[in-house]
Image (cartoon, rainbow, N blue to C red; front, side):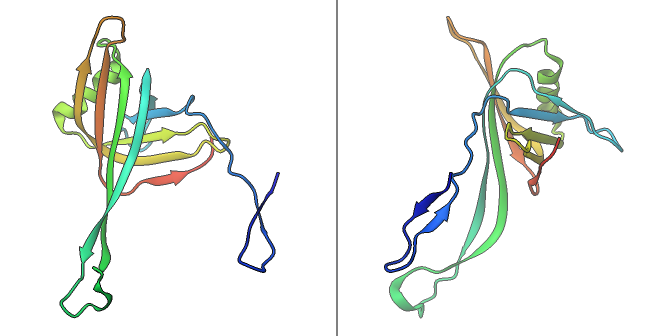
Length: 161
């Protein structure tokens, strides 16, 4: 159902359609196997939380002594692909979780995907290194492992099965 949004003074209201809302349940983090020509992706099992990618950019300060208006000025520099944090319920015997830790030890740049649970199955694809991992355990909680991926290069977005 479209909603009316106020316009400028004296202008007719604009009509908008609210954005669809989705729960995070059903999101999947996929680990590539590096095979050519057709790479296979395996779901990283038991992901509890998924945060990112957290992208950023470089701002180059162009302020000079004769800059007018008393404000700093900037131009955009390189884009930074950022990092991705995730936490799994750790299973030391799980093959995929072990492969991710092996990528850390071998400093392997790996292809990854995030498949989101929206109607179009939006997918983010990117290359990343395993930057860090940390285990945790406490009484009455799952054994967990937090991992951080350092992305390298652009993130591509696609939709479809």
